[in-house]
Image 1 (cartoon, rainbow, N blue to C red):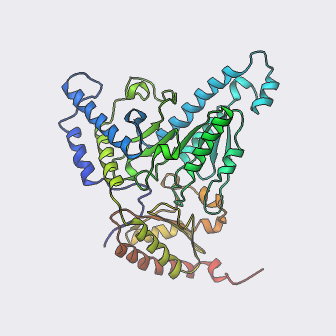
Image 2: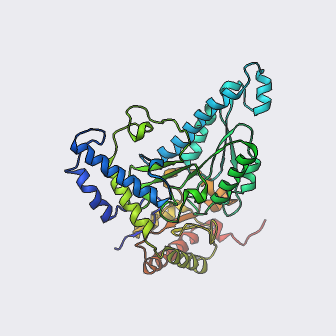
Image 3: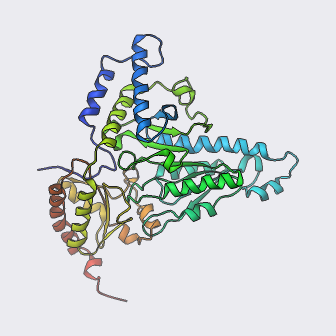
Length: 420
């Protein structure tokens, strides 16, 4: 039976071209890039070529790209190091003779001023790599504002600006949501933060998690006006275990991992040369090819909505990732649907792969106002550049009788016309 891989938001297959680029550095070119002899210097040269390639894809300078183990590390580094450095700088601005009460009032801090100052702005539908890091920072004494989103998952730039406080250190808003695919107004938020800095002198760093968006839509750090950007290789047909953090020149971001002097002293640890080379090759291909994903996506959405009753689309219908389809099938249970789809060799997701196994409905769907009972019937189908119209037609044809069967056994479906 044919396999239908419809979960490219979770991970993607390693491309042949990326694997070919990696092979020398997995076999004969095994040198440590930190050594001074020929083997090591060839490895170092490969890393620097890859750094230049990655930088070109987002309009950055090579010196602004730092390789990491993936999106999660990049997000943690951006948030934790920014906040710790920002709090230290903030504490230097406090008058030593000021009372704790006066400082608390000025900065709206939680308790002891020198330990509790520092504020972060994010939103309720971020990936758990952001939300859980913010929860960690709250335990460390930072305050976090979690902005609500509208019914399509958009963050309101006005709400971002209204949330700014004298001790705000960082704003972190994702480029595109990993579950529902909605694109956020990053460029507008970035421009308004720059204007705020010019008018008030308060410099607030702007980070964006671009893990789902990078290489799927055009990104330019100057157009977006971001200071920090996270991305991951395995979302674009590159190898797992490698990503990057873009750090705008002039941003003083402390090290997150401590040890050696790799990555110009900012990220310790022996470089994953093969992974970095494969990442760069995959990014080069993904950013340079104009696929027909949007047309395939729209065809899939139309068939699902037109042919399966009680189905609704989640997220913005047009301003969304070109490969993302997220729907709710009313009166069914999503996990059961996934198991039955698996029997037909259709591989999809009920939400973020990182939250798989959770008994709670998706935090993204509940944040956009989906009722819990409907959120449990959600399905995320994310296509790849190799997915064809024929593939999605076959998937829909296989799904329809499964959903009909599940509804026939559902008391909620049988009683749907009964009103209290």
